[in-house]
Image (cartoon, rainbow, N blue to C red; front, side, top):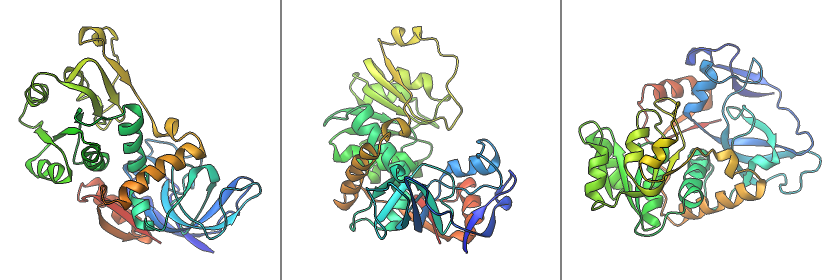
Amino acid sequence: MAKRIEFSQHGGPEVLRWVEFDPAPPGAGQVRVRNQAIGLNFIDTYFRGGLYAPPSLPSGLGTEGAGVVDAVGEGVTRLSVGDRVAYAGGPLGAYGEYHTLPQANLVKLPESISFEQAAAVMLKGLTTQYLLKQTYAVQPGDFVLFHAAAGGVGSLACQWAKALGAKLIGTVGSAEKAERAKALGAWATIDYSHEDVAQRVLELTDGHKCPVVYDGVGADTWLTSLDCLRPRGLMVSFGNASGAVTGVNLGILSQKGSLYVTRPTLATYANTAENTQAMADDLFAMIASGKLVVDIQQRYPLSEAAKAQEALAARRTVGSTVLLP
């Protein structure tokens, strides 16, 4: 028997239980992974709390991790027992000593990347990759506005944009977060608690504004973001930390300069095993080169996942958190 975190009802961190379970043998096209490190993400608290519904209860939790292939099912050709792998997405159950999932969700992990690095960065790193390299291909010299620049994805975007030669302007909510964003590579920061974001963008870009705005905040920043775009600029709304953007009148896009808008998701970009591996290879190369630093500040035993989630919800965490089986 192995052990995992499980919950039988929705609620706070106290509903999480450290229980014995029998790891499922891999079915056709599936792989069983012996986890070495597991990523902690806000979406995990949404499933636990009931905002998102798991397929059934009791349920496992978590969708991000890294480890070693323990067993393979019929028809699995890409991976073999003993391979180092990482994953983000797929069925719930990463908070366990073992996790069984489709081979398409797994990427091969090079020796240059540790299990902890991979578990901490897969979800946020693949998101950063598609945002900066695919949704809009950031070019040297581009002015780029990125909201919540000191956050999980923002912290990686600051570093990656700098490596691409772009001038990332990051919005932050405090002087401490401004310092953090700049240390990570932001070209400039705007503290929205006391600065007019659109006005500062106009000043910082000498009146040109930005060809692209990356907005994971949502409702609170939607209109401000549009005002920071140059004519025919692209609004990338990839998250809704402050609530979803609703009731949009498309006419506003013409009024503000024939703007484009997209609402991308990782699943659409990492839609095949080949695409996911190519994105991961790009991410791993950035980490191996030292251009992208994975900042792991908290490590918890997997059995203490409830404590880790309490710290995350109370915003006591900095950088990434990993759970260790």
